[in-house]
Length: 196
Image (cartoon, rainbow, N blue to C red; front, side, top):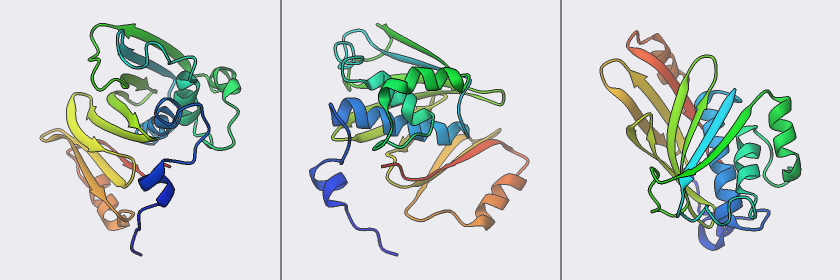
C-alpha cells in the first residue's frame, strides 16, 4: 500500500494537545520511540539538556517533562492526562532525572541527551524536537543514526559493525528478523514503528 503525506502531520502540523507541538508533541514522540528501542518501560530515564537551550525556559511550563514520561510509558498522546505522568512513572517503577548543563549543545535548541536503561541494556540517545511535532534521533550509544519516527527502523548492534540503522516504508519481513536473531554477531536489535 502506497503511503501518502498527511495534510495534518506532514503539511500543516500534528493534531496534538498543547501547549506546543515542539515542546509537547515532539518529546512525546521521542519518548514513544525510546520505549520501542529499549523494548518496554525503562527502570530509569535521565534527560540532559543545554543550560541555555530552548528547553531551559519552557521545559516544565510547556509540560515537556510530562510528555517525555507519557511517551516512554506508552500512553496515548491524545487521551493521556499529563498531570498523572510522575505518579504513573512511580507506579511503573521508573525513576526520572532531569538536568540542565553546559555539556549539551544549545543547537538545535530542543536537543536532549536521554539515557534509559533496564536490566538488559543501557541506551544513551541524542534526540531533538524540531518543531511542528517533527523529531530526529541522530545518535544511539555514540553511533550515528538517522531516525525521524515516520518509518519503520531496524537497529542492530553487532560485534564487528557497531550500530546500524535500516529504514523501511513497510514492516520488516519475518525472514529478515529471523536472520538477525540467528546471527551470532548480534548483541541486540530493535524494531521501531512509526510514531504519530
